[in-house]
Amino acid sequence: MKLFRTLLLFVFTSISITAQTNSLKPFEGVWLSEGYGRVIDIKKNKALVYDICEVNCNKSQTISKEMLFNLFEITKVNDTRLEVSGGITKLYFNKINRLPELCSENIKDKNDPLYNFETLWHTFNENYCYFQERKIDWVALKTKYKSQIRSNTKPFELYLLMKDMISELNDGHSNIYVPKKLEKEYRKHQAAEREIRRKKILDSLGQDYKLPPIHVNSIRLKMIGNYVKNVKTYNFGVLNYGLINNEVAIVQINGMDQFANYNIPSDISESKAERLYEKYSNKSDNYDRDNANGAAFIMDKVISEIKNTKYCIIDIRFNGGGFDEVQLEILKRFATQDTLIVTKKARAGNGFTKSSKVHLGPSNNAYKGEVYILTSPLTASAAEDFTLCAMSAIPNAARVGSNTQGIFSDILDKKLPNGWEYGLSNEIYESPNGVSYEAIGIPPHHLVEYNKKGYWFYKEFYDNKTKKDEAIEVVLKLIKN
Image 1 (cartoon, rainbow, N blue to C red):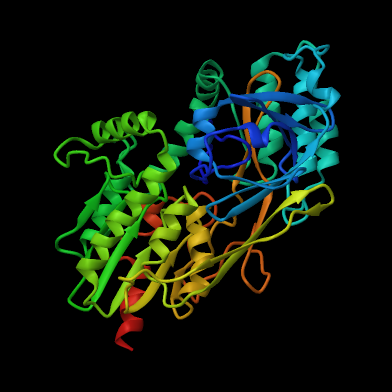
Image 2: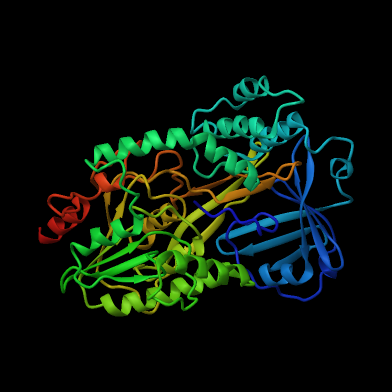
């Protein structure tokens, strides 16, 4: 998924921008966003951010002047309009005279279950993009779930109802996040179901139910290792790569996050490396920038090592997404032309905001050979954005595998009156010719049919008997022909 960032500041999930000034004075005042449901009260040394919908205005964050300048570039279009831009997004805010009355009301109990439910429902109702595509009657769902809520409904019961209602969207970018105490209670609640599901998976693989789970990256490394003698890996498996032979390279990209180059030792355990990475990322004053710079660093290294091959397989079948900046840094190392790669717009009332148009050109050291992109139902979010943008940036690249998952929007992060955080899809990503693949995913040129529900890639992607990967075998046959 495109990561849920608690440090989201205004409306962004993955934007890292440098401010143009060190004074907030030109921007002081109250500003209402076009779309996104935000009100920003910019003062002398800070900005107060409010989430607003028909029934609620909730202060979600206070941002210091220093943090604001470190993360954002703000342009004053005129006395009544601001433009905030960066990454692949442009957003606009219009000046209003004062905070809406809802923002100053303190008459409602912030922990009232019905009040929190109404806030969540209305926020989706005003901002969510894909009710039609996902065949959802949102009004009917309100009736279904609100009828089960009372003024004395306990927090855990409310959480389950909200989670179930959001789950009906079948959208991996829409979810709700609760405090650790409720998370722990939910894990306990789900323990029996998880054990049943795990047993079914292991039974289908012919493995002993008592066996401990195998770490996902060990399987991915084993898969690529059957084709590459000397597999190289970066940041505990976010990227694995090597040469299948002198003509064919493979780059397995398993996420669009955790690319920051923090020089983590390679001789420590994976779990320790992940903890160390998290420690450094939490200390960073701009993790998004670190991530993009790390992607540029490793991709330059990868390209320098595979540049003499004729073919490159980009495997993003296990890539659940992350940051657009990362996928764009990767993409431009394979791009063949300077072109419009994607447009995006956000829900705004009954319409949409102005579309942002994103162009991308190849880097100076771009790969010159033929490209094959492997996809699956696990390919999601920023990995799907990569696939979508590659359709224009690498027009001759062949896709092999199954449809991607079909979740493209950045996550619009919000906070309920009781403090719980949640997110939803409020943006539409489209190809340059105006096609959206939300809810259906991007189809392959050469189908390798992976099961969309209940699949487990131990079985689906890797044959223990033949040691072969069907999608890679398809590519090798296409190359021979």
